[in-house]
Amino acid sequence: MRGVELGVAILYFLTMLLIGWWFRWASTRSEASFWVAERSVGALVNGVAIFSAIGSAATFMGFVAVGYVYGLPMSLACAAGAAVGYAFALISFAGPLRRLGGFTLGDFFEMRYGGQAIRIVYSMITVVFFFVYLIPHGGVQER
Image (cartoon, rainbow, N blue to C red; front, side):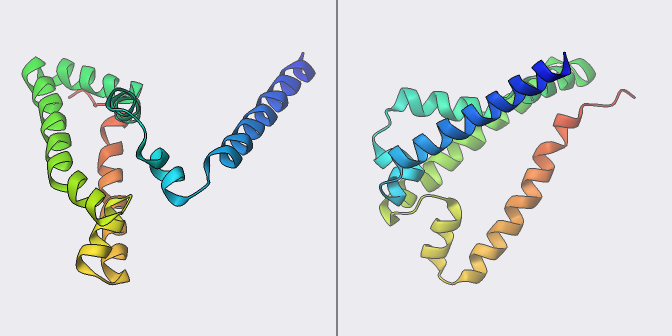
C-alpha cells in the first residue's frame, strides 16, 4: 500500500511542477505580466484573490477563537479593524503605487524616498509584521 501512496504523491508533485512551468512560460512575457497580469484583472477576480490570500482557514478559526474567549464584540472589532486597515492601504498606497509604476510597497518606498536602505528597513518591518500576523494562527490559549 505504501508504494501506491508514494506513487500518487510523486505523480501529484510532478503534475504541480508541470503546471507551474507551463504557467511560468505562458505568463511571464514581462515583469508586469508576472506581478499584476498586465493590469488586466477585473475588480471581482482581484477581490476574490485578495480574499483567498487574507481569508485563510486559520484566520477564520482565529476569529472564532477570539470570539469564544473574549466575546463577539472583540471578534467583530478584529474584523472591522482588518477591513479598515485594508481600506487605508487601498486609499494610501494603491493609487500612488500604480502611478509610480511599482508592484510592491517595497518598490513604492524605494521610488518615493530613494535608496536601497529604505527597502531593507521595509523588508525587516514586513518580517516583524508577519510574525505578529502568525501569532493568532497558533490559537488562543484559554485562561
